[in-house]
Length: 240
Ligand SMILES: NC(=O)C1=CN([C@@H]2O[C@H](COP(=O)(O)OP(=O)(O)OC[C@H]3O[C@@H](n4cnc5c(N)ncnc54)[C@H](OP(=O)(O)O)[C@@H]3O)[C@@H](O)[C@H]2O)C=CC1
Ligand SMILES: Nc1nc2c(c(=O)[nH]1)N=C([C@H](O)[C@@H](O)CO)CN2
Image (tube, rainbow, N blue to C red; front, side, top):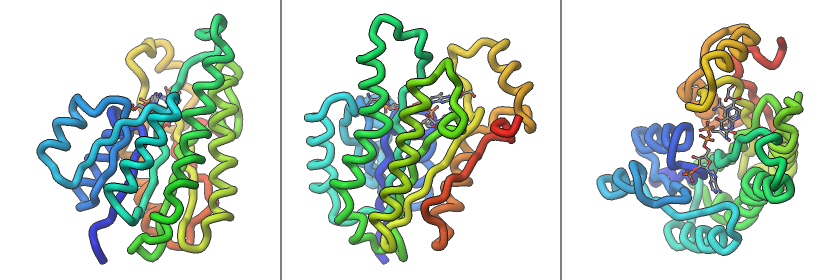
């Protein structure tokens, strides 16, 4: 079996960058989609021939078309797609541009994953592994929305529904699953009060860390009997 090939969206920072590094360390070839081809990701690509950085802005259809063309020029088979790219902002922050914000959330959480799954389905069917994998990274809020993030949550719910359709459409050669993260990694803009409040509502009151998601991703990749499944990685937050 040849070298496994993964495609990661939103690879430029945090979980996307963490998973890019992890899969490279395991010997995978990684196609990393990012709005910027520079920075740490670009530096890594100069030093590691197993990493290809491809520019992709989900909000620009031409950029997505060009990224799909570039992926197909790089490989004729694909073993894993991680739909990680995301925008996370409160509705209240977009009172003046609510429609444009909702369009952006749809484009990044639903349109981009649907287009990549459809456009790359032949590459996935050519996978050299027993099955190819697609993982949609959603959110515990997809099942039980936080009304302050209604627009974000609804598009994550749409991403989860797309997972079910692609699981039905692409079986049995391709397994499609979703992971619902909880309080994995706060953002710099989170205050200490925000963090304390969230963790006080979480059975395991700590940030899970990207390693917790990586373990769940690996468990899906290694289990040939998992498809159309939704795996929560949230420290129990979703039941409080
Ligand atoms: N962190 C957490 O605690 C939680 C995370 N999640 C989910 O887990 C996933 C990873 O989380 P995290 O790493 O914190 O996410 P971030 O918000 O830090 O990063 C998301 C990525 O999305 C990409 N992105 C943003 N805008 C665009 C765009 N217009 N076009 C293409 N890509 C874009 C960026 O990639 P680049 O800069 O390379 O373009 C960025 O790396 C996300 O799907 C998130 O919704 C869910 C619940 C909790
Ligand atoms: N794209 C993102 N989505 C989400 C994030 C994030 O940082 N980026 N974070 C959360 C969590 O609420 C976290 O901030 C604290 O629990 C949800 N989605």
